[in-house]
Amino acid sequence: MDRKLTIYFTSDIHGYFSPMDYANNCRAASGLANCAANFTHDRNTLILDGGDTLQGSPFTYWLYSRTEEKSLIPARLMTLAGYSCITLGNHDFNYGVKELERFLGELEELEDESGVWCLCANVEGLRHNARYAIHHLGNGLTVGVCGVTSQFVPNWEKPENIEGLTFADAFETAREVLAEMKAQKVDITICLYHGGFENDVDTGRPLSKTLENEGWRICQELDYDILLTGHQHMPFADKCVNGTWTCQPPDKARQYIRMDVTVDDEGRVTAHSELCEPGNVTPEAFTELLEPLEAETAKFLDTPLGHLDTALRPSEPLDRALNGSLIANFFNQVQLEASGADISCTCLANTLRGFSEDVTVRDIVASYVFPNTLKTIRVDRAVLTKALERSADYFAFDENGEIKVSDSFLKPIVAHFNFDFIAGIEATIDLRKAPGERVTSILYRGEELPEDKTLTMCLNNYRASGAGGYEFYADCETVREQPEEISELIINYVDRHRDIVVDKTKWLKVLY
Image 1 (tube, helix red, strand yellow):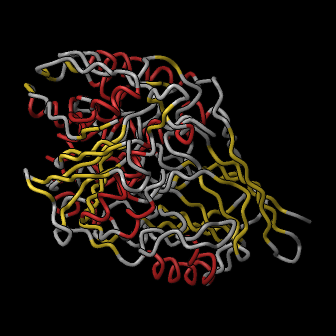
Image 2 (cartoon, rainbow, N blue to C red):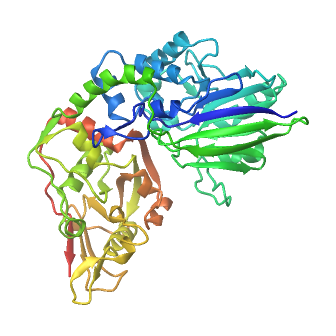
């Protein structure tokens, strides 16, 4: 007789517990609370999370920087949702070991008979943490759950935030724990991994060469029945890679995974998973806890955090590409200070709010809308020329000789965000020349940049991957990666400086 297990899986919640659109101050059909409204609770169900819970939303920014409750609230919310096991993501270390252990200790104190286990087997030195858990279901099945996180955490995190902790190899730890669980004769083995896939799950095509994401290798070389992944914010469901059933939800609790697992009489494990919408229902217990806190958060979001010497109002996309954008200059200011790079590259959303002289947190999250982190790479004149030529493709001419946005940036999707603004070099592009020959000058500190000189350039991780037609960036040497989202870097910058003079340099000259 077949026996079944139901799994509800979230990952990369990033502090989005409430059904809130913080940029527009309105409700949204998302958030952990609304996901939890769909979870069933019985002895044949496990509710699991893949990490990156504590950082990433204006709510948790307010919670950790302006209040004393700190770890108490997220732990209570996870307990309300009925989680069986969680692992940790790289961003869960952003507030330091003390705060993380408070969160885990609160989970442990609040747990009921089912428990909320933190499983992060490759992190040593952390209290309230286990290598794996064995769950005995009502139908007699035994399920072993292992948790591991990306071993790249020390590459990203501030040393003081992970003092006393060691991070072992994620793959090798997953191998060791699999053997430990199999020794206990479990029926189902699950790896809860805060990491993604280094190869495309459909084609097997390599996506990266680092050990940041090792989901493909886990599926190819280990024989877990189920691999639940996160970190990449790359949603997919119902995949089987070399006999391992796998999936990944999107970030910010915009969807969750439901996986239905079957074990037949021969012990064979099969699974079907799907991405599910949270819906608009918020359980009363979440509402009672969150509403007063969200009211306080809203006041914080709408209170001026700092002052700019000029308002930054967005112009039309074509105008800002031709004439520059002070909003882009401001974002580049932030990135340059945060990274210490020589030059900075940013892009702007198709639509954005902009800033008055008095800057609020809500202005920031409504104006830098991407969930990007910051990366610093090494570039030379050849790479910068390719980048500027790609941005020059944004411009075209109509039948009357008037300049317009190229159709390639409008179809099949509107992609004004693929035009880049680079600060720190003064560049000239001449649209009267043929494509590929339009970059006529690249000045660095007033002089033409030599072919053999390299510069460090900070840019968002999406662009650094080569996305948007900038594939050459993927081959550049990585100098530094920073785990904080760029929107949070902007918030910290305004909060720290308070009175800000915006860079008004026109970095790009367009001739036509």
